[in-house]
Image 1 (tube, rainbow, N blue to C red):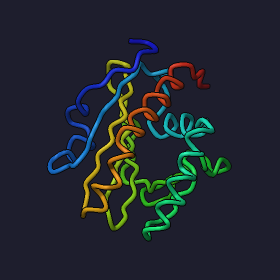
Image 2 (tube, rainbow, N blue to C red):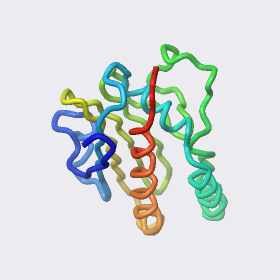
Image 3 (cartoon, one colour):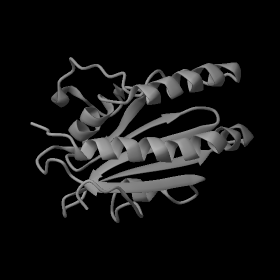
Image 4 (cartoon, rainbow, N blue to C red):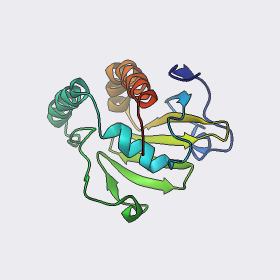
Length: 172
């Protein structure tokens, strides 16, 4: 599996799996972990910290369009506070465009809520040396459904791209 991105179910027993009932959208992609000793939050920070420019350009378009219908500007996916030490993060902190919802060495949940939907992203390390990224979306109204029409297919491309980049990481 090294280097290959596969799709599957949210890891059994993960915090992400508990969020699946009633979800409008969810997916899960997996890849071999680039470093078995790295915690889930550090892996997330490393990967998101090297977000491709085209993803941030898509986020800029998303933010402009979202503003027209009264939704919040999330900023860029790769916009992290790089000076903050890993040990300084706590549940409730902002981590780029998301808030930290759950934190353990093996799984981190990050999410955001707006009037149209709630989105939660899980990075989970599996005992067999894999890393899974699970996204769960619960929508609140028609605007959430409309929003997900272009976002769902783009999301899949972005997650797969980010995971392929993970395979090439050489983490210290």
